[in-house]
Length: 329
Ligand code: AHN
Ligand code: ZN
Image (cartoon, rainbow, N blue to C red; front, top):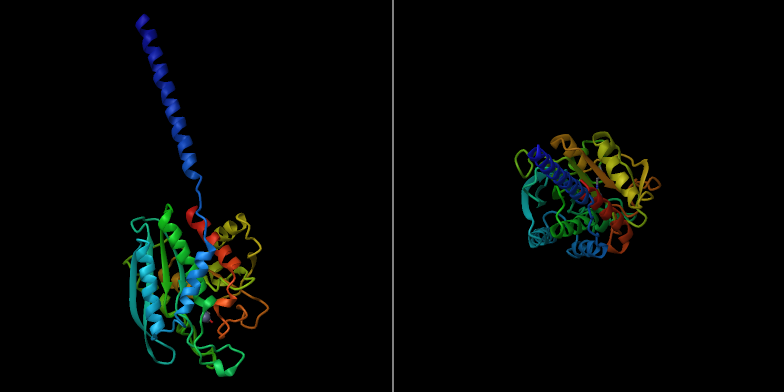
């Protein structure tokens, strides 16, 4: 009887200890769940936009294009990320054989749960929407159309190289997005596939065989003054859940006035080909301006798309929102 009491007493102590252990484990889990999202440094992002523009128009076949590709590769390698260069050839609408280079930087390359973040890095060879006809064959700086999205992703890559997110992230810089058919040619004649040659190539031949990601976010023209982002048609058609996730995140950190719950028009952009050929639900965060004739920002495909028009506020809203999504995934 005495022994039984001792045994019971011991059991009680052991089981109490057990409960404490459990409680500890639960609270530790709760601690882990509280994720701190690193601060997106907008001055840094802006400097990356400026640096790209300083190369001159990154038009395929030019020295500026080659030099800028080297700059990206060095940048990501210096962050100790795994870098891929996907060199390929594609035929342009005017029959030129263009040399393209999609550049991919992987964060947590071994992680099976991954997301992709993308932007195009080439700039348009023609300012075919310029008010002055003389400029219709002049290459553009593409500070907003190209460099802005890349600058934001470079800063995200830098933050992620310091403080790794829980998931794998692939930053994909697509080439040959903006060599689409010149505006002087009837757009009803076979123009769609002349855009986004780099993403078309990648989506059909990913840099890793059998590549997959949970979802993708494309950034395009994210740096204009007063930019707002609506629900782009193809994004909402192929990836409505991703739209909801991103717009909710934006609102939660105070950017509900920039990520508006409005119709964002339909844009044939890199994300369409990722959805169509790689089957990865991907959205486009793209500046939609219902009041302009093009539907895009005021200086779209003009010689005015320069660094002087880039707004840090717009870069910041997009950078912070994408970081919020990626780190909380
Ligand atoms: C078309 O104009 C068909 N698509 C626009 C895609 C684009 C051009 N994004 C940036 N520049
Ligand atoms: Zn463009």
